[in-house]
Length: 177
Image 1 (cartoon, rainbow, N blue to C red):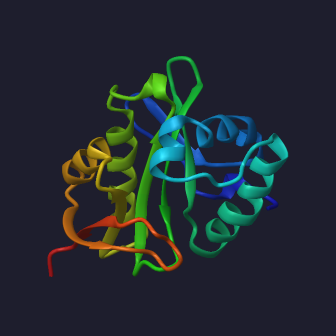
Image 2 (image 1 turned 60 degrees about the horizontal axis):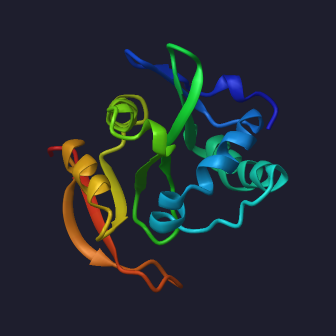
């Protein structure tokens, strides 16, 4: 990817949220190997910094170039520490766009996930004119379910993605017609 700076970054009161770039590889490596990521999102086989760079190049950049949004790195303004990620994903097996988030354990429970995801949801509606935003989570991920409901998404159904054995809860937000 030539110029990641051409894509939208945004700020909230406490956070900077910008498209994930290759400079985030070591952070992404750490995040994707936390116990909660492995438990609730799954092992993405990212075990080295090179794996992380490849994941960014092959999984994040193509969608960013195609749609103008993808995964974002969330940075705390007060000390410029990378605390987590949130993004909008065009995920195979789901209709429409899916919102997702993950934070390092030491930064959970501080409101960063809601703050960044709420702003992202608003941008999805206002900038990209999305009329529907979905989300998937596991039944035992209660904190994710609470956050999705706080963002205004409503539980719709239990489902499975193709080739996946785990049952997922599907949430949806739809613009009023």
